[in-house]
Length: 425
Image (tube, rainbow, N blue to C red; front, side, top):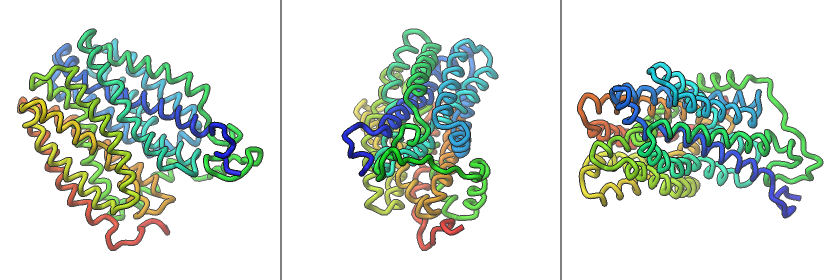
């Protein structure tokens, strides 16, 4: 009989819930710097560019670790890797409250938290969905991906309120406490494989007593990731996918996620209200990502990406006016941009599968995500630098808008007139 027909809650859903909590805490860690840029700069008399460089190191390492995280999931197991990730995030943020020098922030926020966040990122959700679910895999992947938006929704308003009331050190302490609370949940309830819980993956047929642990491969996952990258870089569509996701990261995590609160404060909008804008985006991001997954199963993903990037570009060109115009304009931007925040993920994942084949799609997507975070790191630093030079974020927003419009055109040739380039390799 089916593993879901016994009437009991299948353990896969418990694993998915634990993973959601872990990704939620990691999302809070990634959201925290956005409300601390200005207070840290004011305390240590650092320019916006200097503070932004710390965040850019964090974002870059977060993306770089992603393609190699599968090696840790195999050698250490999901549970121990998740415990290590939460320990790194909590330690990095906790110790940062005592930091007084630039290099200390680079080490703690940039390296320690960056590596920990990369171990608890989108690739973790993909690993859990693939191991534990045969049916409902897309739904689970969508929910775990959306946890980033939910984390932003939960943490940002409290971060902003705490920073306003108690200073910037209160925000990293909130992250440290949240990470510590996640540790016992992971330890008690997380399992590496369905066999450990005496079940089959959700949706598979067979009695629990016949469950076999999945076979392991002799191929080193890190070497496999590099081999697939070597094959992918020879294919034009990889560069179109990676290039568009570079722009995606630059225009979301790197620019809006890092600098919108500071830009709003520059325009006289209170910090708590500014953080509320990002939280509002998080609400609509949940709806936008879910809808994008539904659309990706029914419509041409190239055209979806064309629409997403094009509309995002137009919204960024509108943002400088919205920041100084009536509050309704900024509300419209928050709703519209929120719907489009990570709507690009489902069609990009699907195009990776169509071009490179199912077996290699997840690894290729891992490298595409690395480019996303490279773009985010680039924008996190450059937006701060442009703000330092010009005294305004307007040039950063309009430049990102122009890049999005270029990306909208660039995604149209992906997979057109080509066979799956690596499917048979």
